Image (cartoon, rainbow over all chains, first blue to last red; front, side, top):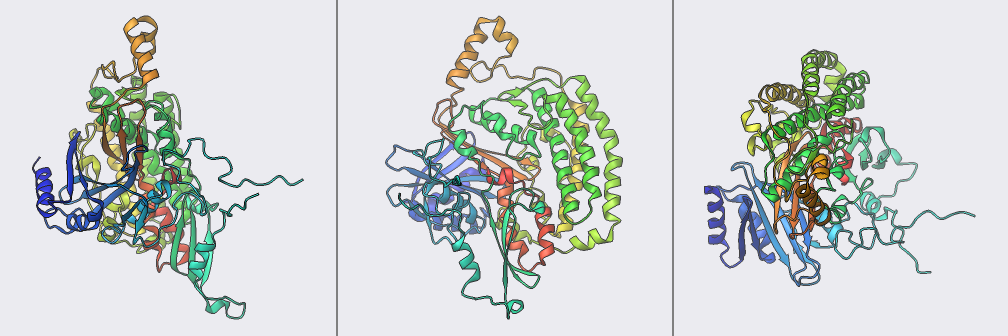
Length: 164
Length: 416
């Protein structure tokens, strides 16, 4: 697993103080970074000649409910040249839940960030078009948060009235 | 009573699109026009809604609106066990149910660190490839119908029907198959099924050629698609296109080859690519992929080993029903798995498989209990649709129909 070590080493050299943790579970490499550095790290991973992570496959969040750092934002990125999947994570530690958008680096991140905003209420600053993806405009909740019940909240969506 | 905001207005959207121009009757032809397409439009393959801004017949910009089929499958996954979720994967890309089943169980098996027996893996491979052919048949048929060749959909559905009959024998259901299990498959493929597959393949080649003859001998079909909806290689990668749509833009990326799962590394097949990246290339690539699938299926039938179809792993794999009723140990394991779940180790994995529409990925976060803490579905149709606004810019309004058909979205998957 040479490339794995190369990625880890390069990231550690470049951002020695903002890499919090590197884990390798079931052959998936994931790197936990400080949330302030997300755009710089993304830019570095995309532009570095050896790495070239040109494709962002997915962005999502994890709601830890009771933890103090409630949300973790997860980026799945992919390097076509090296055929390698990498996972970047960043913890959000305080309200307002906010992180900088990576749409300037990967244009494809646009909809993934909108979806994450819709489902978790995490604000992506500098996003060009941060609207809800699935839920209707004006819906007040964020359904994938752990405090949103599976059955939904009665009355949160107006139903047609009975005409007498 | 407190005033609730009206959630169904699109004030924001329309205002932004209209900017500050006031359209009056007198100068209506001088002005740009905003029209709504869908969600109930036969050419949008489901409930996709587009808001188009037009200058005459030229499209200036497109805003896709999703969510009309949002059923919250990611939320539901957090409230059910890993085994209970298998039937719900049928409802993602409902044209290729078995591909979804296979991708999901492989993701859970990666999380658990177990592997299905070789025969089960080969059966999965056979099922996935048959499913790929069936999905591409729908894609090609409806695509041709969208641009006016209505006969095509009858011909492709005739072939698809034969595959559905095989699924009926193999999985017990034609459409909502739910065939795979964690650690194997639901039932062994008996000799009758294998013979049905072989018979199907033997006659399929000639009907595929017939279909090609029908469409490619048609000047209208070619001229409506050639050079329309071009996307460059760089844009396709940047916007996260996968599957046939990415390969038709000249990027040779297929997960079956890049990160072989099941036993695709033992199979010899080509990855068709086209450099053009236009609508016609996206038609050709699906035909080529079907031909490759046929090749794969012949090899799978040849190499299919004998043996078990469920892994021997009592803590994670459900025992067979007859054993539950006759053996004490199996009864206990069944009770534990059903009541407490399969309890994978704490951690998170991302697994992706090559589906007919592109890369279907499952990101599962486990906290060690019987239910996933989080499950994220990376659905290819959703990511492919993101390129729509880019591709449609500058096209004619009738091309928009062809472009949607060529991207081949399935809204059940895009909306989750």
